Length: 450
Image (cartoon, rainbow, N blue to C red; front, side, top):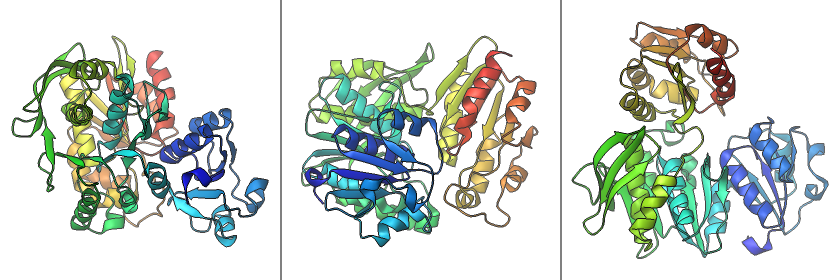
């Protein structure tokens, strides 16, 4: 199916961060856009305000009338998170509609465009958002499909007037193999999604296949230490692109960039943590490869405000500091904890963690426990199942038993705000990829009025 021939699009699972970006893109093109999701959220409410018709009833009768029968100009996009017995999904399957995954649609959109794709088991949302911001802020321009809401633009999709597209390439279900980038960045290849891949070797194989899909004369930027051939980047001296003189000033990370040809001194990044400095090094490398001037890049780095739920400071008063982060893998938790401790080394850290997926909790229980044990006080919520059914013996109590901290406990999601109010923590961190984000505003209000 060609992009120019698509006049109607229905999204089954429109409330997902990646799906909603596509929905906004097609709506901007003047296409009829409708969708279904099981839950009404702030994001779906925003889509409704933008003129997109959404139903929350999984019934064939709830499908918009213009999607009752198949037409050649109609595209149906679905997420693998939708259950196979979904009435709406089966309506489209049984009536011969063209069904595509989000990644396949990104492949259709990026055909004929200069494609910059960022992949990795973590770091890809921040890195792709940084690249999109550097290109936009410097006037170079781009269209972008991102896996988070950028704070600069309050959106997960950007619209450019040129032929350049930045996409977050998702390794889940090998989705990124629909892309053929001109520039690719691979941020990490830590074991994850083992419910799909089985073991780490198959995950690595998938990343190698993605790297091989780079167009002729394309550029591949690879985090130093990964088993791939490309232009390496890191915060160490040995890689082709590197950061040096890293230090903290007024809560921001300041560093120098070098690549053997270009040096940019005293870059100022508002997103804390050496892992984010590393992400910035990759983004700067991509911007320089496109011919963007170093002075413009330096200014753009300083104006990057980050991504919602990526080390997002919610409360910053003399009594309380509260940070919220999307971290849901042991390595992400470790990087997040390190950043918090670098910024606030003298404060006692209280962490609320909501594990995401039964399989991920089972596969990385020991690693999660090791990282969580480095916090002063740990509060565990029950596992957020997302697309999964429960696994016997895999629960938050199992994880809690492995944590060695003296101060650790389970707490129900409905009582955790009151519990935290009583604890009155000086430094609070909420982490997780499930629905823990619904606690952010209540916790923020509780601490601001404590």
